[in-house]
Image (cartoon, rainbow, N blue to C red; front, side, top):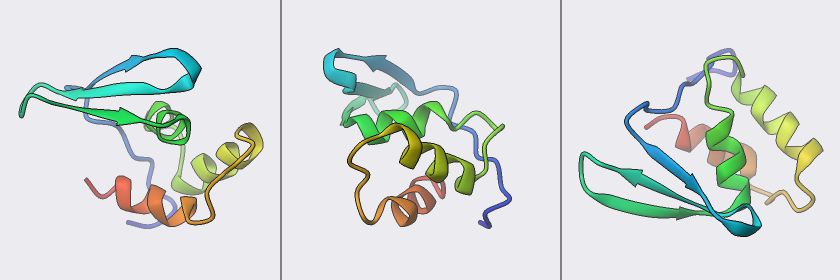
Length: 81
């Protein structure tokens, strides 16, 4: 996947945002839920087919105070699935 790709989240996944910008992501196909931290919620909400991986990373840096050092690589990994 290159940085020109505009990834789209699986439309079957259900994101339920909680307090303090945390969320639960539910996958009905396997019946599992996953807790997402604020950085992951931000990334998931930008998987809309309009943003490139680079766009997502740059917006993340502008909007989140403490972006993890490995965030850019993590975004690439997340978008492979």
